[in-house]
Amino acid sequence: MRRLNVRRLPWPTDWAVLFGAGRPLVLEIGFGQGHFLLHLARERPDANLIGLEISNRCLSRVERAVERQGLRQVRLIHSMAETALQFLFTTASIDEVHVNFPDPWFRKRHRHRRLMQRQTLDLLVNRLRPGAGLTLATDIRAYAEMSHALLDATPGLDNQLDAPWVGSLPGRVVTRYERVAREEGRRCYFMVWRRNGRPPPAAPRAKELPMPHVLLRSPMSLAAIRARFEPRQWHSGATHVSCSRVFLGERSLLFDVYVKEPNIDQHLALLLLERRNWPGEFTLQPAMYGHPRATEGLHLAINALADWLLALDEGATLLGRKTGAAEPDG
Image (tube, rainbow, N blue to C red; front, side, top):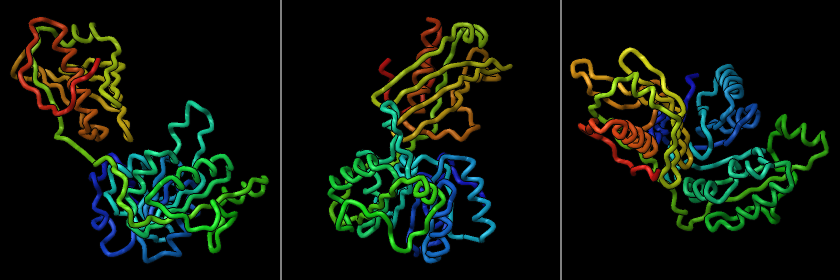
């Protein structure tokens, strides 16, 4: 099975190209050891199944199981849920979602990583078709209470149970995690909601710009630029860029850059390349390994680093700039 990654798939993805058209699209967020996803694939041969997971170990294990069992209607994607929901899916494109025992992120400083929070839930509801189901399972009472409060305050969802949750669901496979939880004396909480016909919440659109680059002239050598470098940070709104290291090559400098944007992080390299036939002229562009995506954050990183390069020497001049994102705040 060819491993899929949110950074390499088209934004948004045409699932009919991967699966073939005409079948419901079912998503499991965080499939872990894959017990639920594999069972669902055997029980639902009529559906196209997508599993999201960030653990490479889990991905490799479940990939082997999918191949061994010949489950051709299953695709596994290495991605955070928020990233996949924003960039891979469109409004009203998912028919069913399962969230099984998500990490509760107990510590206060980690709460922003929780899957169940207002912004992510609104994004998920936007991606659900009217009539689509959402099932959530957890073995933590506080997480169940927090999740129910969020779900109950979501106009686009209707509770399908007579109570906030139940202790079991008929016909549901018992995963290894659930079995261990019960053996250790923990209760399990299952919630079942359905997307109604109300207008969906607004959600960010998958936006990818042309690949950016800057052309500049500088009297400084690559070695002199490197000698002036210190780790730097820039930001614009909710987007943050940090440049921590630089490496000198024969005709280039390689800047180690981290870009954090809403719902997507990229660790990439920016390349300052001296033009072969034009001494003193340089092109600043993303290095193509690692598959950088041309988000607004990448454009911000190119703009910020170019401005720093131009400020190093009063003889430096801008020859051309192909960027479309906001200038850094500082």
